[in-house]
Length: 436
Image (cartoon, rainbow, N blue to C red; front, side):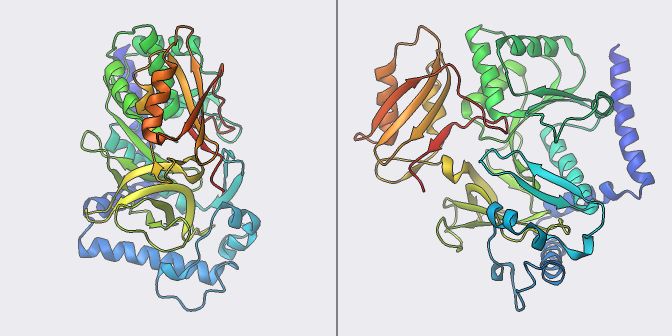
């Protein structure tokens, strides 16, 4: 049986690259280009490649789209306006390149987790590039084409495939919705009985929920041939990082990506918590919250990208809605923090942004299943908790939160049966009702 499983894994690998070769090796060529640009980042040839890719998309956008046509004189990407989902949604037809009108394009739609559904189009070359990006960064994390991929996310109508498609790609889809104790039990038992080489890709909150449940049942670590775990869509907490290694004997990295673009960055495997930026396919900027000017090195700001390969719907200086820090003193520059969306950023009573502290506060309390911190105004906060019946450490928990938020903060506890997920299947750890 084990030999058959390995045979099928290798067959999938050989079949994938054989089909690509017969079609002109388009994915392979992109893969080699990505490998070269990222592994030889500072060479003159690599720099020229990246500069040419940036210039080409800028020229193409100005020549073929109505939105960018108004930009007549430009010397650099900074001469272009910063755009966001609202601007693109309200002017989508003006962003579409006339070169691709009446041509077959891929429609990419986001689920509207921030309350705004979003749609763009991608041409075939962009799809090839995204596939090659996925192969490159997955290999960096420990996943190889042909391995089984257990994928825990929201499987909506845009993503669902046929059982045959899942079999061919060796994907085991697991829906994040209604992830209860019984489903976790079944998933873990399936892992224990599966000897194939595999990787797990999951929303970070889903991984945390699984690990917290395993804590409550005092689960013993398993060795199930898991080659890697990739956390996506949400910030990966230190608790989840440690717990995944403990229970599944698997290295784990956090991946930063979105539906409309692709893989933007990924943590180095077993090296550091820095995110390797995908400079091969995107140009990155970190801009001030209120102006379109760059922030100082390693200072918190808006993550703004230029997609170098989507010629169907050029996205120049696209504000992702996420915030982060970039250290440009390192070669290549890396993202040292990705903090999620601005609307999820919490400020203490002095008006200082504080990030990722909520998971640190909750780690010692095994009775807490889920938590969500809401900033109501400058001084008032609501902490929603889903807890077991024997939780009795309210005072200690509030005091710990006040240590981060400020001695003059007011923290109210609200007990709930569940922290609801968004339409995207993600669960917000923090919510800011104070920022407008």
